[in-house]
Image (tube, rainbow over all chains, first blue to last red; front, side, top):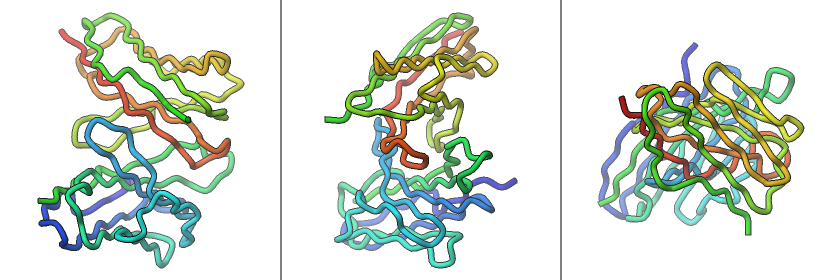
Length: 117
Length: 113
């Protein structure tokens, strides 16, 4: 079974440029998350989707960040314009529908490392 | 304020010994707590989940305890191996339900031959 796929793995841009990250979750996982991880820190939730609905975007800086999951499968996270402080790893995760088989475990992708110069 | 604290200093141990990592939390009432392993440049990988009504959970060489009175979880790796070297993250549910995980900063473990 394929895991969570993210691209690109690495991105270097200059400040004020836009950038987009893509995530394809595990098949059948209806919940998708975007996390931000700074060096030496744990992941911090940016947004959580249940199918195509953003059910928790309270931590998403909406002035420059946006996300979409139009068909309830893959998702895109965009930053426009990027700032120096946005340099971090952007992690996507997914989890299956709640029920007996759901242990609360999150399945993470390998992350997209962003460097803003 | 709400906090999850893991030892920020790396834990260095000798191969074969038991590694014990600590996760303390403040002002949360989690229904469960999870532990993840993260290797450099990789995403976190789930290891174990322990619920609030469970005192201890084991999986192979791993053991997790959960003390809701002390607000603490301990994560043990017995007979540690150099391959166990990684950062270990604890995470708890911040809202009392599934799918709202709050992560600690992690503790780096280095197992020396």
